[in-house]
Image (cartoon, rainbow, N blue to C red; front, top):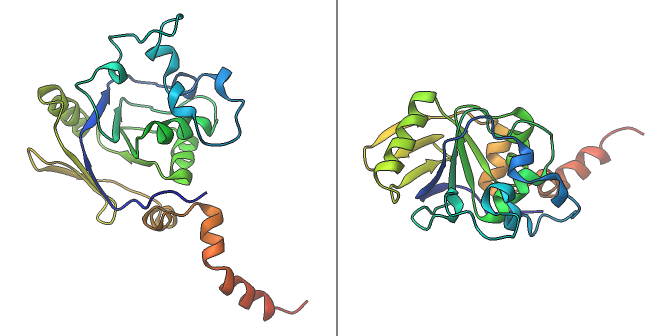
Length: 198
């Protein structure tokens, strides 16, 4: 399933300064019945966003109109817990294209990369700078430059580099998942196979 190409993302960000956010908090298990990637955004952080009567919790950040943007900034150890792909699906379906944290669970990181959500791991010090910038001004613009592998707080020009797997980086720049990548090199695969002895 192809997704939008990721190049340079400049947007405001939504702060979630909570550590150890696990995948059951991102998308509760009772919403895992669907097999397609659509519709999960409605239940992103469901138990934190809504009361038992489905009314929005006014104190939760996604219900606060002053915060918006396509970057979610989380606390340390984001995406821990079970390996459910649906957590990444929910983040993408809600509209986020990037999650920033000082540490990601490995499986969650890979699930994000597989569907077009860029996990940007920064130092604890830089993460705190981002939180403080958003607290001072919720419209603060953050630039995530995938080709250069940098994240910048535009108001202060403070910048930090981040790491990403070369293969996953190429896929995100092209909007490919793993199957799209294989289809893109189909002719090369067929040529290789034709020249191999049976």
